[in-house]
Length: 113
Image (cartoon, rainbow, N blue to C red):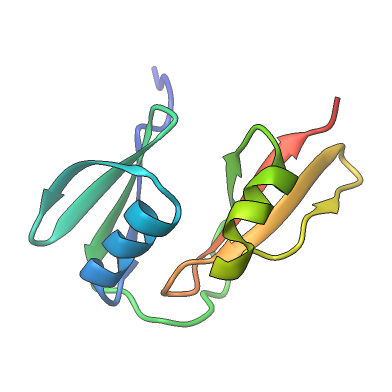
């Protein structure tokens, strides 16, 4: 049966802009690239992008949480890139959200000890 999610693919408006953001700003490792598709490794799961999307808020899009060691430390490194200030969550996590160039929402998270 199903073992795990291997890949999540987002359609984006500008593949080159997306590559620059995820590679140079977030520091993700690019594992493969073609003219119409790019893959980044995120802790053993593939985050991929392909042309065909639009900029702007996507109603009903899922929240994508990216686990970090410390949200506050990561925020300090990325705050000039648009990461929102961290906040504690009622469920025990601490989060900081950011938008990619197409306004897809990603959330940095760590769990308080």
